[in-house]
Image (cartoon, rainbow, N blue to C red; front, side, top):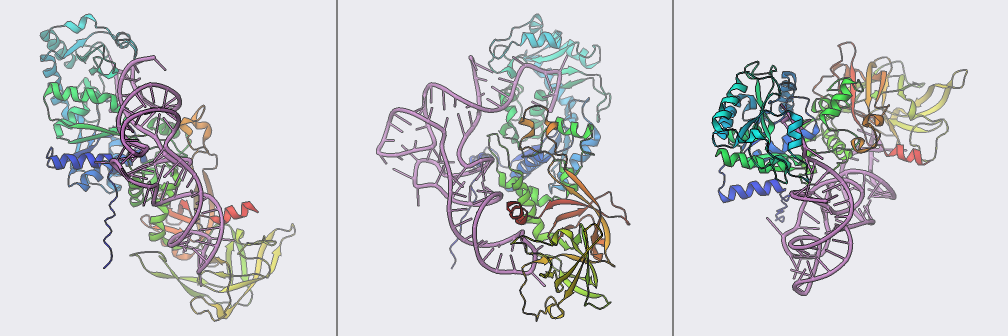
Length: 558
RNA sequence: UGCCCGAUAGUAUAAAGGUAGUACGACAGAUUUUGAUUCUGUUUGUCGAGGUUCGAAUCCUCGUCGGGCAACCA
């Protein structure tokens, strides 16, 4: 009997909290939520949060809502809502409900009225500058102004006037009456409602006052009976306020927990910076394959599986971090190696004539998914007298450990024959323009009687049947590990070579049937996927990630 | 310099007072009809100083360093 491996992965701190809450009977079921503001596209940092919230619920038999935190009409748009819904779905998660904080505007308004009635909120006529000054600084307490002592009746009346549009933007705000001398700035009578005569993407012109984050988020959690409200570290100082409102309003006690947001090396992660990259045309769009957005990663060829796996491996903690992008790439390759359909594509062709091969076409069989678990299959690739190999796979005067083709040397052509280079053809300027080789008829793949061992195996295509395709080779967008933390403007660190286009590469004919859903490995080159810019006669492929290449390092050493 | 978080190999992440482990990376080797994959091995760590304890990454104290907080943003 094999020993039972009770190798349980240890729990992260959120899992511990949930397990404890379930065990103690504090909750019978958990309900989490993913609460994006629809003011931009989701990025891989959000993927961490999505996987965390949905993952936690999935693990403990709970549910997760997708709730849009849409309380600022001037920044939010339906376009973003749509993209967010699609991204969550693509990642593989199904929300229990798709909700909007704006659905709760009336309830939120009534909660504010309740607070006023308890003498815990007041209408303040001060300007934002005055309020800022009166709040004091972290080292000096704030001071009350004369509006703080307005009567409940007066506040009720004024707040009603705010709602009915009697005042201009900025003329009045509603503030919670908490503690102006608190060492926690968030508690110094925070503004909870402001006047904004703006069109809201869902409620239109129905409202001219909108609740602030602190008076919308926690209350929405409570309305939905969210048990575990998980957010990022910068909201820690808001937690006392979150709890204060729950207590004073006497509503469902949701609890807030904070984790460290994801930072990835060689990219930036703030919506503001990403927006700049798009607006200032450093990239072409939000879904440019170089962007760390979910839509960008999707277009680049990342799989949901690999991203989920990645977020799983990085774990969750409360310390700031900068995750090495190579871990993301590892997770990607791990998935793609198993599930990508193999194809042969020559990027930079060098013509080869097999001088002793007849003028016929022979079909060679080759595996589609050599590492595939479930996926199986094979296909035929035409072989003929006139081929292309990769120019970099030939060297006239190779270094010691060069296992590829060179004058007099032999290599195998993948799934075909061993060939030997007899002659190098050059033009008048001495540039190599073709090779003449001979093949070893008894060395056919799968029926090799030659008894020869060769060190290298090359990919190739038959010239007559080759399909021209365009390749977009993407590389990291930034030259430095942490562009956001580097001196000066982060845009100074953009990698000028983040996109290389190969207009015409030569693919084996079966690639003409490529589809968007499939992932491909172009043998010995990298993983690719079909781009949406393709048209039937013109296929464009994005390089998702290259294969690991230890030869590059070896060659550099020499 | 008020309050609040945090600090374990290069990067992440475990060890809940009892042998500091894992992954990625790096390096070396084996296998290989992808210089891929796979496999094996190596390397490097508890921020500092005190204290409690038979025993401290873990508890306490004081430092140091990093991050956050003074938007009618979320």
